[in-house]
Image 1 (cartoon, rainbow, N blue to C red):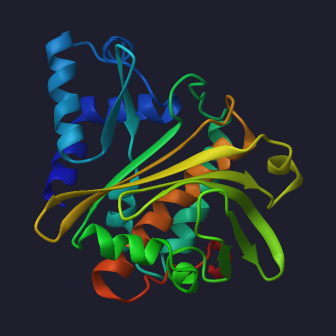
Image 2: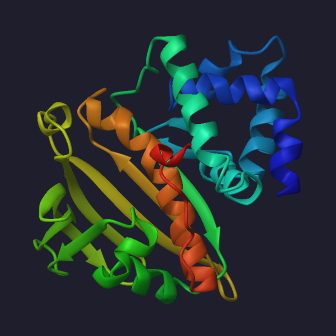
Image 3: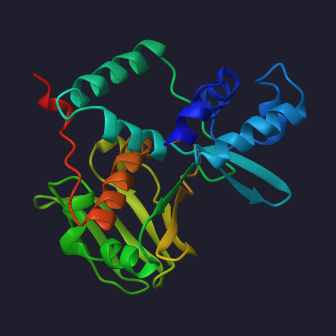
Length: 260
């Protein structure tokens, strides 16, 4: 975690992360306007953030887009914020967002949410957990079940009790490296009005018994209620998934409502 703290220790790098939080998927030219330094200086700061996995990049055509990856920060939170303090911290963060007012603008032309993490396990181990409906409650919300027909064209449904909260269709199933499915949120009337989006899981071996997991959630059709709301859930779910795969034990994170 030293790389994360070193990256966050510089105010210029924090400003770049703030800029990506306000509008994800920016090019180097756009981010240059954020800092009073040279283009080379911005590139150096972005390289530090990439090395700490706080920023991930994607090439789309001739452009290279930069995305905020909050998963490492979530892992710091999981390690250092106690299960008693976590609900209070979340509540304070929610209040801050409400006071700040406006929601961050989203890019309609590039992937909206890109998350990247390294897992100490071979790709097959990651794939087996990811595609095992019986283990879904261990890395998603504990009250969330999954029912899936594991084939291209098959249905995938996440449920709380008997109520579907996410429904979709498997677009691509390529074990153990790639899984693509559509994502239609149903947990509120607001998100149910949105068009289906797309979730892509990519598992890449990077060494002996180590792999990189990249999750891209895109194709929202612009800024929508779904695109805003999923950004809070994915980092925690991915942190839970990493812990489960590496230790065999679920990561227990209390809900915000548990605060006394």
